[in-house]
Image (cartoon, rainbow, N blue to C red; front, side, top):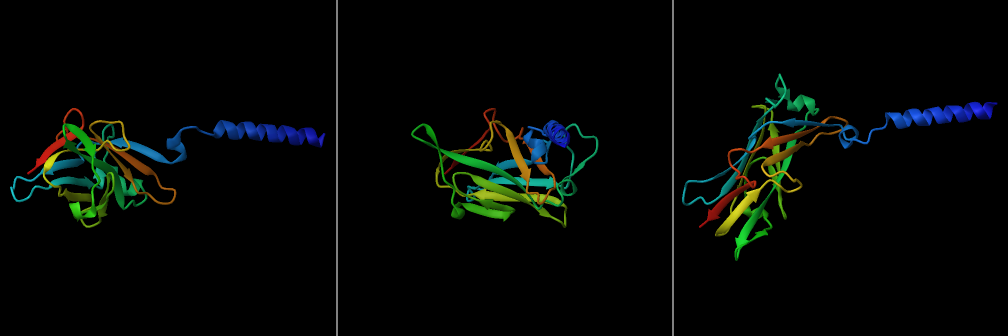
Length: 195
């Protein structure tokens, strides 16, 4: 009789555990998704001596987001995430074809935030506790040529910059989708020429 009770208990426990499981990655990884437009911008200099292209972000701690009635406190929601990470890549036109280029440390002018280079740039907007803003400003100094920059690395979206909080422990990871409606063309590129 004890064997039947034990078997019944194990069967019920298995069913309850299976019913509680989720196959949604966002529940397993503790993710939350928010949208707010034009948080990351791209600009080129008007000064002939400065041919750099700058990628900028100035994201307030209290963020007005689509479909939220109150501003989202990014810092509090993520348990004090010190960075918001995003990526971008650069292509150069060579003989009428676009080719991805490797960016080197020497080609970056890091003013605010941090950046890691390779076949793409991993940018990090770093939290500034004085003005309560996540900040990023990095210039790209490239040799003469025709280029295009996109935020599509690790993404299928054309004109959306995908930022992810660098949360620690069991805090929420904020996935911040930021459509760029001002700098990118319909295909999701910022085109520029360096003379």
